[in-house]
Amino acid sequence: MEAAVATESLSKLNINGDFASSLPNLHKNLHLLSPQQVELAKMLVEKGQSHLFEHWPEPGVDDGEKKAFFDQVARLNSSYPGGLASYIKIARELLADSKAGKNPFDGFTPSVPTGENLSHGDENFIKFEEAGVREAQNAAFVLVAGGLGERLGYNGIKVALPFETITGTCFLQNYIESVLALQEASYRMTQGGQKKEIPFVIMTSDDTHARTLELLESHSYFGMKPTQVKLLKQEKVACLEDNDARLALDPQNKFRVQTKPHGHGDVHSLLYSSGLLYEWRDAGLRWVLFFQDTNGLLFKAIPASIGVSATKGYHVNSLAVPRKAKEAIGGITKLTHTDGRSMVINVEYNQLDPLLRATGFPDGDVNCETGYSPFPGNINQLILELDAYIEELKKTGGGIKEFVNPKYKDASKTSFKSSTRLECMMQDYPKTLPPSARVGFTVMDTWLAYAPVKNNPEDAAKVPKGNPYHSATSGEMAIYRANSLILRKAGVQVDNPVNEVFNGQEVEVWPRIVWKPTWGLTFADVRSKVSGNCSITQRSTLAIKGQNIFVKDLFLDGALMIDSIDEAEVKVGGSVQNKGWILEKVDYKDTSVPEEIRIRGFRFKKIEQMEKHCTEPGKFELKA
Ligand code: UGB
Image (cartoon, rainbow, N blue to C red; front, side, top):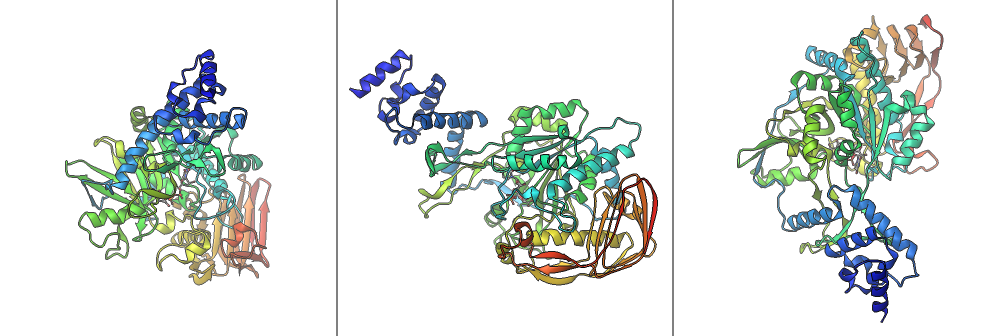
């Protein structure tokens, strides 16, 4: 009787509800839905998703929630290339492959590829840095920052974390200031040309969008023009509850599909659909650089890497560092298929060991005689040549080969411990490229190029001995080590480090030295700004904040902070001795200390320092 009434009211609305005739709970609610929503309901039923409506109550109960459910379904449908039907189809195929234990690299044999190896400070490196700075004005920068950083467990967004705590500069500020410094330096090098603004894109997600925008707005975009920065928000994708790719309902709300992040691979389709790539091409740009949220060393590697891309004409250039076996970074690998095809591609850290074992390397992912894995470690910083990138995306729409990684309850692989979803990675972009594509990579020293902040203190302390911690502690200490080593190469006598343990991690503590990107963007810049007999003791802290600060015959044993406007030229020298800043240990469990500090395991106790601020144009001399 009830069904007949429902059918009658549907026909008045011109809705054919036959598809739902065996689903009474959906059928009797269909008249509440718009024609578009009815179409979506039909698609879901046809794709084996009837369970989504089993609990639906009578019309009149939770009607608003039922409509909201379809609003969400419409969003999930429109944000995925090919819609939800395509998502479900691909999910079923990938889940079947996963259940059958199919090797995604079937038919491929891995070998170690050859790439460009750079050694910081030598002639080659300096040449590439110069070429890179010249070319930087033709680049756009894309930061992928949609990840929650579950491994770190920090409550805020990762780009808001200080990358060093002498000045408290956060990652995002460092990235923006580095891009602005590159923009200026590139313009200076090609004087006479038109002054270009380097576009800066940030991919966010629902987890990070509002807080990223807030961070930018509350700091006046860290000096960048707001119009120069674009935020592109990635959508999450539907979770899957079983091998039939039945969509999972949100445990908190049975009128919502549970969703999870789709991975950083979304950046390609978002860039393509935003139209920005064409805008950039029309503006004469040649390169798109992709990078991640917490690598404070990154911009020390950028100028030379752009130089490599430009000099070698690479369509794809992946930056890499020597990799310790089992380190949680992917391995850059040459894969050769039995049919003759080959590609140079990242093999993700959880796949490298099984791939090697399956292809004649019985020990799997192990170090070779150098003490490192023979496969260079992918730091997920990619430089793509814009024209070739556009040509490829015209074909793919930016869709990246996905994968699924269900955690099964038992060996029968019939049910999951928790829902799963399809994922994609930005470094998988080269997988669809034709053999003619010029795909290369550039290896640099880890101390110069890579110090991510990914692991919480507890997990970092458990990292196998000799492998990097990838924690807030090691991330900050790596900045001081890199700056100390660069100054040494520039002729400054910098004391050796001491070893100390913070939050259960033993790290090298070098003199704490930082500078703004405008001061030392390249090695040539640093070399031009230090001269004479300079030395810095281990207990020292030094912050250089100003483009035209020249350090000559300086002996530093304590703390020295200098900042100056660009129009001032400051000469610093003499003997600076004071009680300085002391590193005080903090326990990560001590909640009386702010989270961004206690996750490092130390903080600065400022006892005494010499400070100099030059706020007027002109020439100054600071001699202690
Ligand atoms: N990210 C997004 O923007 N959206 C997402 O949906 C997910 C992430 P992780 P992981 O270089 O250190 C990568 O989680 O697992 C952003 C490479 O895959 O830090 O450590 C997120 O905000 C691996 O090959 O990635 O692995 C962050 O900026 C290896 O190279 C970035 O994507 C490793 O990084 C990476 O997210 C590394």
